[in-house]
Image (cartoon, rainbow, N blue to C red; front, side, top):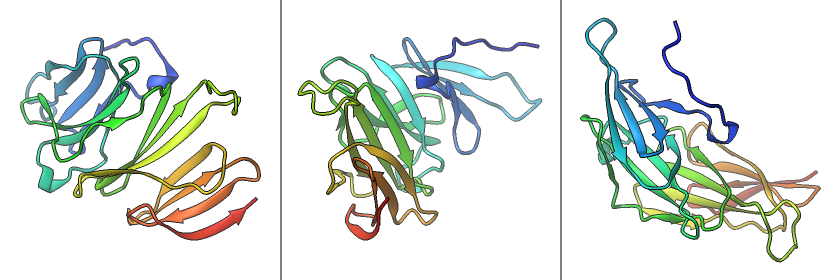
Length: 207
C-alpha cells in the first residue's frame, strides 16, 4: 500500500534521509525539518516532530555519528535565504529536535543556486561544492564554482586552493578520510590530491 507521496524534484533528492543507526528519518518541509522517530519493527508507532528552520532548502546527513559531538546524527542544512545563502551544522537529538553546533560557524555560500555536500567516510569533515549559476561578469557561460573544506573537530572551514581556472567537475574522498581528489579546470581538466588540511600533495596531471 502507498504510505507517502511527495512531488519529485531531482535537485532536492533524496527527500528522506536516515540517521546512521536508522533510528530516525529526516526530510525537508516548508516549515523546516521533519524528524520521524522509528521504533524497532513491531514495537510501536513512528513519532513525527517538526523543527522550524526558516528558508530550509536541503539537508545532508553525515554517514556516521561523531562521538565527541554527541547526538543521534549530524547534518548540514542549506538555508536558501536570498542574499544570505549559507550552511549550518546541526546535531539531531534523541527527542527529534535539533540544535546548531557552535564549534563550526555558518558557512557562507552567498548567491549559490546549487550546493553539493560530500561527507568524509568517518564524518569528521565535509566538502561543500557550491555553484553560482549566473556569472554577472559573463566570464563563464556555466557559472562559477567554489569548493570549501569543513573540519568538525577543529571547527574550521577553508576554501580549497585551485591553481587552474574553470569549474570543479568532481570531488571524491579516500576511504581513510585523510585525503580527497578534486577534478577541476577548463578542458583538459586537472586532478589534484589534497590532504586533510586542504594542501595539494600530488598531481595526477591533466587530460
